[in-house]
Amino acid sequence: MYLKKEKEFQYHPGIEKIIEDVIGGGTIARADMVGAAFLGIQLDELPPLCVVGKDVNGIYHVVKTAKIQAIAGAADVLYKVKKNHVFIVGSIVTLGASLLKAANAITAIDKTNPAFDSITLAGTIGAATVDDVLVLANAVAVAGSAVFKYTPLYITMNPVNLTVANQSSGLLVRGTVNEAVLPFPVDAALKALLRDIRFV
Image (cartoon, rainbow, N blue to C red):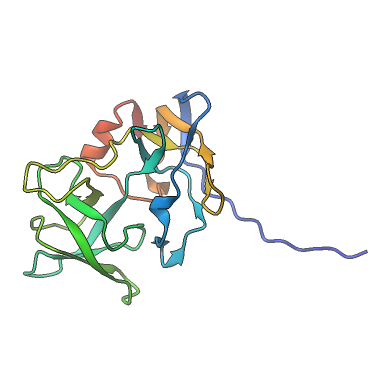
């Protein structure tokens, strides 16, 4: 008889209270994650506790974000962000979920520094401060005209296998979430949009 050893991985529990969820959950789009790396590792599984929005076909998409880690200097087309993001070249971003800033496309992502990623945009979206959050936008826009690509609606409740099509997740509508274990950053404006979810 032979014993087989396997390593088991478990995400930190982050949902502290469920008051209401979407009955039956929702299908999560995996096409958005093609080429995306999380903390430098190519994703084959989407972690739970992601903010998602719904498209016109009823498919749910991750509302991608990244937190500014350091001020890049005078050039406001370069933004240094923490590595826990899944943006790819071509993504369009704006500065903050309040949608007050301009939006522009990512032209390059430099992941060579172990402390942060450097994101270069086609044009400035404004001066950033540490802990500001880049948010996925729908199209290039001037300040005050940016819109979400997917309006933030819910938070996913379980991991999603990205190697298999049409995978679903539970979707939290109302409840309490531990912000410290969210895989991707949220700012105050994003939390306000998720008005029935309490962040602690």
